[in-house]
Length: 89
Image 1 (cartoon, one colour):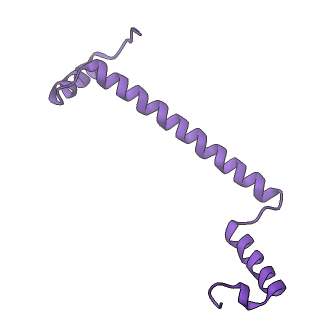
Image 2: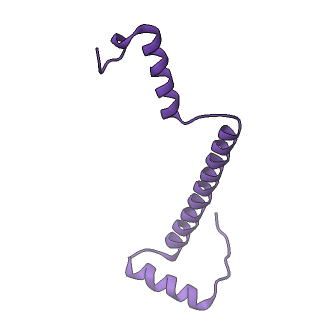
């Protein structure tokens, strides 16, 4: 798909020079730049979403996985004795 983009003349010259130095077209550089920007935006959205989910989990009484598994191991040892602990066979 074709689009028209108005760029500052100095910016366009700089892009054109760098594209030529890398034996690439301005079109390739612009497309790569837009794709990189979009990826960064999506990564930031994913990061914020994960942070929000973790905050909600903690607010609702969630615990860290390590703490959960330590508690589970302690319950297992209490119920079945140390023989259930693979490190202490």
